[in-house]
Image (cartoon, rainbow over all chains, first blue to last red; front, top):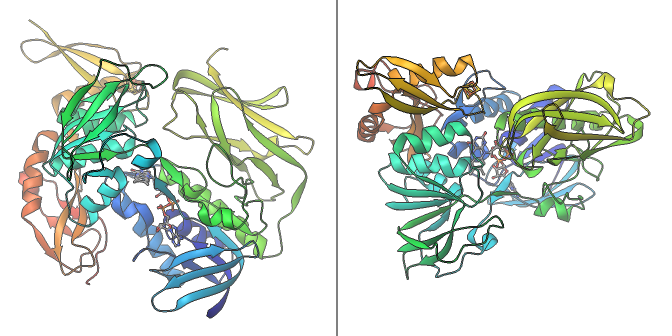
Length: 423
Length: 123
Ligand SMILES: Cc1cc2nc3c(=O)[nH]c(=O)nc-3n(C[C@H](O)[C@H](O)[C@H](O)COP(=O)(O)OP(=O)(O)OC[C@H]3O[C@@H](n4cnc5c(N)ncnc54)[C@H](O)[C@@H]3O)c2cc1C
Ligand code: SF4
């Protein structure tokens, strides 16, 4: 077996892996290898050809490929080693990395630190269990996005989209512009998980109907999809008998959620969080295994790549500190706990003592949409900080920066809740 | 006779549903439903001259992929999106393509260019 040694191995060459590698380099680490299974770097952004990326990080609106290319150039300029078409098969708790490609065959890399940046995958029909036949024509929206935007293959002519998250909305516009008829976008919840902007610019602009509290209850067709049965659902998301109707279509796109891709992490002994589906990490994005870090969609699903970048810069910096002689730990770990209307918070704990740090960003999602809210940060019963937001919704990650000077040695837990303004 | 036009403001995540009253001379006589001043500017613009960035793809010969992503370098009139798609469908580029390459200059006389949004090396 081909054996190599590296100080830092980054698994995944999407925006998370690229930013982490770049920052580790800028902090002085020179011996870095990025392993990517695809034929090129950039991750999922290469298929997200629409604009809307980078407003926060670059201050201008870029498309996915433009955003990715910036970071691809950054790592190339720095001379970071890259292996493409290389699939990582295993990462051990001792930070041995096993990978395979057609040039080297099996690769065994002895790493001192590993950054996990494998991104996420889409939930499929199996994961949501729609009854009926198994004809061709049922795709996850992201797979269809890759076909249409990169491989020049249009999956069908009459399309129904299940799920109104951003990927579903973006694909509705894309299929319409490519000449398909988009019959409807169906959403099982009473609200859309997508940005208002996408509802306006992807659906309203083309008179594509968005039907709330409806779902597909049956799939019809022998070889090719012929139709779907749709029903209204009640508050418990159960189909209401008697409301069924049929839509003829040859394509059904499922945009029903993303799951962090953590098979490798689990095998490495990394502890997972029930709600995020990603590793439990401290504010440096270090997992329970010393020297193994995680960032980007593998850690929790982000809606905006800008925050993926911010988070991955933190992971890259902490990995560099780790390699350069270790991280100072606080005397007492601080747990970070979600309170009212907060689904999860990343990081789950604050454990490090970092000299030059001014802020610790907390990333969180609310459980249900709410208007005119106050987001409160507590240490025990004591309120430390609050901020008002006009509107919060589960589809949009909330960032809450906590000034370093507010984090004191005697704290053992922080809590965030989201309540109506004035309560 | 005045007419009511509904426009969703997308200047912030609130997404207010704003109603415009327009009279027979096409003057905006009333605006209702916006929660703030920024909404007024937005809906006026959106009523008079709605524009959009158009992200799509163009065909490429001899590249590592058969398509390169492209976009309008400025927002273009919304009503011309379908026609613009037809124009872009006529193009076939030759690899290599570089990010920023102008694929179509001044598309449909809008003053807007179609530009490539990534490098696409030769196969
Ligand atoms: C279909 C889809 C559409 C999206 N649309 C938007 C959008 O419009 N706007 C937005 O801001 N965000 C969008 N996102 C979120 C977007 O994914 C993130 O913003 C960002 O791309 C996440 O970066 P990442 O590096 O964590 O993951 P990815 O971009 O997914 O990169 C992960 C990389 O790891 C590689 N990899 C995985 N496993 C292995 C392995 N075992 N060995 C080697 N390599 C491996 C993958 O090939 C991939 O290149 C979308 C996500 C998806 C899935
Ligand atoms: S009107 Fe004001 S508050 Fe409402 S969406 Fe527009 S900018 Fe936001």
